[in-house]
Amino acid sequence: MTRQDLFELAARNMRNARLRNALTTIGIAVGVASLVAMMSLGIGLQRFANQQLMKSGMFQTVFVTSRQDPRNMDEERDNNAGTKPEESPALDDAARAKIAALPGVEEVAPEVRATAEVEYGDHSNFTMLAGLPWSARDEDSMEKMKGHFFSSATAEEAILQRDFAKKLDANPENLLGKTIVVRYARRQGGGPEGFQIERQQKSFLVVGLLDEQPYGGMRMISRARVFVPTQTALSMELMQPADTQQLVRADPAERNYSMLTVRMVSATQAEAVEDAVKKMHFSAYSYLDATRSMRRFFAVLDMFLGIFGSLALAVASLAIVNTLVMAVLERRREIGIMKAIGASDSDVKRIFFAEAATMGFFGGVIGVALGWLIGRAINLGANLYLHRLKMPPEGLLMVPLWLAAAAVLFAVLVSVVAGIYPAARAARLDPVEALRYE
Image: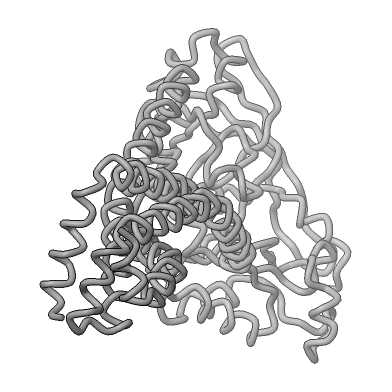
């Protein structure tokens, strides 16, 4: 029996019991739809999380700190690395230049933040001022802000958080294009006796208003309320929290950084740069370390969603067994004639396997389409809810091509497995007994 004859016979048999076969196929479709909908939820959530981190630049960023810093979270591990914290190199301009020379490094920006007083007209408020590197212009929150990013890396311009700007003017947008005065503590001089602190002030042109924290709030400078270019902040010689620690050192003349943020050209280079920085005896951390745990979480989530989604398909497989068993009872005479004219047991089995596979295939295709429609409906409802909250739309469920193909193949496989018992039962029929049945 050729393959073409096999499927033509299977299609004819399915047409003879249209309602029963259609209901069985619909049962398979519902099971596949639940599987696709649940798996697409896990895939969509993982894609959403990855997109948010990619937009924030976190995947291509490595944070570098000195092992001398008592706040270093890796202190215990570093003590086992062969270099004691007190013997590790300082995180200074020389270290910054050395890290900047590593292959794939696009920018090395120090974390600059300090307390300052901001004055506009008759209003003044104390807040945290921080430096934003030039690369932050591509950050997601900058695309949504009112106004524009700094005109250059050394511009005397400022970007304000909207909630802080309201303390200076009831209508924050009035500040755009206006000048604010920033008073701050400046570190000056140095030497064996330490450095001096003097009060300074500087004027800045307000060019932007932020509604969100830069970098998704995942960096120390994100918590500031006034942002200026990092190069401008460095030229101001701001008195920073790390300066207090440096004051008690033997030689406080040379300024050290509390943290360097290393940005790579591509996220694929982050791991190599992180390893190179650790070989320089600095502590390094990247969000790739955290995403390994995130990927494990989504892998487990996808597994459980797939298991629960498959339960409906398992129930549908019982309908396949029932349908084919009924077909065996109804077609005993037909099976007896086929075996009497030379059909083997394997030929009879293949007929029933072909019928099961056909129901599984059409049920899988319909189920994928139904699962896709369910995903679209959920996305639409979620985006309407996000719109009410004045948030941008997001795609929370997605059905990639590989998931659609895998769902159809899985439906066919389950259907064929469900057809094993009916096919074996049909193959065991005695042709004499089968012809005597009617």
